[in-house]
Length: 311
Image (cartoon, rainbow, N blue to C red):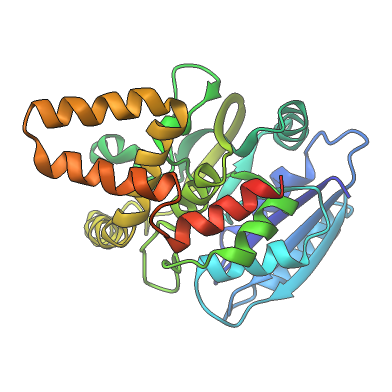
């Protein structure tokens, strides 16, 4: 099996039809492909509708239903990954409409560069109603827009969004054996996020790159519910709380990225902090330096080093 596409659903009966119809139109060529729909406590007809729609599309490739009773997107995705058979994993949210060459292009890019750990593309918002003007100043909160001016290494961003995220199954299985999510992601009316950022940071600490490919394109469907200004404020507040929980992991990853790029430049930056009498910043850098060279044990970094050793 080459590709496993994972769709995690919670009461998705009004969104799943278009998502599946776009997947059915994929130009996958000779790739072996499977579709896994994770039922994350759906209380509606999501599964029934999905099976009916897929049959109407003539079952272009295997659709499998998996159940995950524990609520939360991170739990649902993990369930999908553990049951997947494909070499490459693609997260397709229940409101993501993948362009017809997305799967084929994603597979080819991942096969062409073994250093890519996480791959992502561009995303354009679409809706049944006119998209309000305030939305465009908060595009990235909705996993919309472009990640870079051109395709290539975007590891310095420290994250890419989970919509359309592409991973290596063997690698993410190793990561999951050593790391656990602090954030559960969306569940019910809880609009928190950040579990996709955790995945990105774990990959960076494990020595892999984040990659952007402009040829990977999705349409991100925005329901009336998501474009309501009151719900938007709620979402922004909950995402801010999520980001606070990621502070320590994010800080370590930033320092590791600088240190791994050039240890000498990192030492020079410490010297500059000392000359400027930025003692606090110097002590932070010194703290991470002794972690990275192995003097001070740190469980997060020890786990990441284990993954690097078994590459």
